[in-house]
Image 1 (cartoon, rainbow, N blue to C red):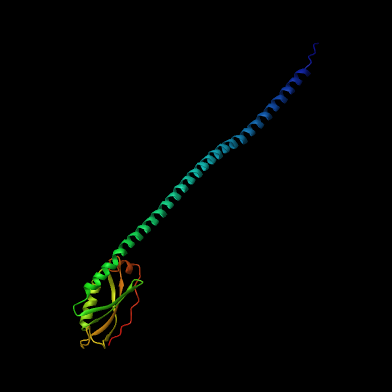
Image 2: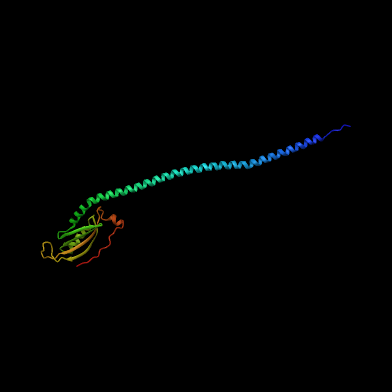
Length: 207
């Protein structure tokens, strides 16, 4: 009778089973690691791209801020230049303005009206004189209002002259005081009125 020893075969089968189980365990661990690692790597790449995009956006924002600062600086300089040009133009106009004002003041006086005094302060002129009657004074005011250098012409007071007219002829004359706003630019007060620089009304008294 022949006997066959099967112990080495069974032992080999058990060893093979153990190796198979170990391989399956290692494969499972590797798959698990890949499952966890792949999303991590993809997330890292996404975060890297976002960081680069954010850096580029910050660079663009810095350039835009620098350009905006330059624009604001240019706008400020433009405003300052316009203000200086307005001042220069105003000075040029005021340099010749008084001559035109005196010319219009003299030209507005009718034949039977004499100017005694004229003064100006803060853009307001005070004119005193003597006239034959109230109609002559009214005509003078109408002509003065028609000048582009005078506006808001207002009669302050009139009174009977006790000393008579020029040359003391004994004829009664009307003494008057008129106030008027003065516009050196020759715009008839349009710029001042638009800016709200209206003078308060002066009281009127008559004799």
